Picture (cartoon, rainbow, N blue to C red):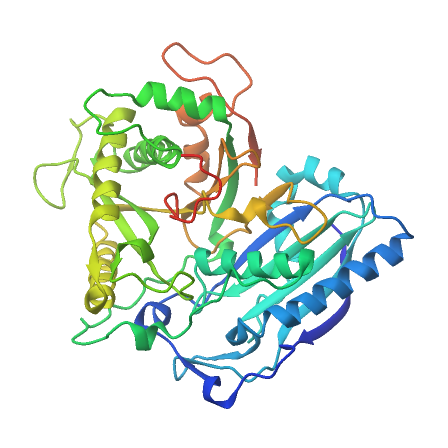
Length: 463
């Protein structure tokens, strides 16, 4: 893929940030996030605008720059710089990095070859190694289609915060600023931080050189088939899309682990990021900005004794794992936490997880869900996105994203290079990726390409 940066500038707020807002102290939840910039890519088809290609591109870029500048007056920390040593943001209006690029070819051709492009998607998301809080790259294709790439500093953003900002900016671009979204910053002052447990160090990231990313797409029909396979009348509710896809991938990873450990099944833990905001009492302001997520942990015990593994315990059935996930995730969502206990609850959960990882006796599988966040509703004035993507991550994880119609799920699986072939040869994964007829008792397949369900902010009400 040939992408050339043709313009680089800094976009500042249209109104200077007042002096009393120039320093933003980070909350403990912000401070413990990894230093990786989270990337989001939104893909837009040509909208048939009149005028020459250059005129259309110039109008779009000017509109984006103007509306971004206006939006930054509300989201002023995004135009500042993160000060790592002091755990604060200098809201100095230095500006958001804004890149304009030319991408050779047609967007439709690129999307038809996305299975070959996963490792190159970072070229569409500029600013990966800069000091800015937010970097934006607009890549214009020859056909008039474009890709908008965003890199967010994880010390300031979670998925809820990112979609809040993008929705506000898109509205300003499309019809002008409105009064629907007014972000609230400064969770460090709103939420008490007394008597916090000592933070355990974060496990080291594996690195992109040791991982490989693939993309599996489950369409709506396949989700329905998974639900039917996982059905149990004892369940208190129907399993969600995220729960059945998680269970299928978790089960395949158990088989990978068993093959690596002499046919012994190890105890394992599936973790999910969940939006913390709906659980906090009294409620926070509706557009509270920052990292307010917590990890829900679901455990499958393979041996009676802690730390052991068992050659006699079979890999659990899909419905058994779904049942564990329903119990765990429902309990996490329904357990309310007082403001004074938010940080301590988060840190205890984080420390517990890191302790498990450090001991190495339990397999830990990380799931990150962006399902039901309104990425596909973000319209800057030339229609809604035709695709949403991430870029490969430098650690083992499974990212779950909505498909464009909202009925299916894209699973972006990032695993160790030695483990990925075993995963792709798993019987259920093969059934979902092979064009051949499935074996008896194994589900048929959705599409496959190489390459926080329960966000509570759910304009796309698919479950």
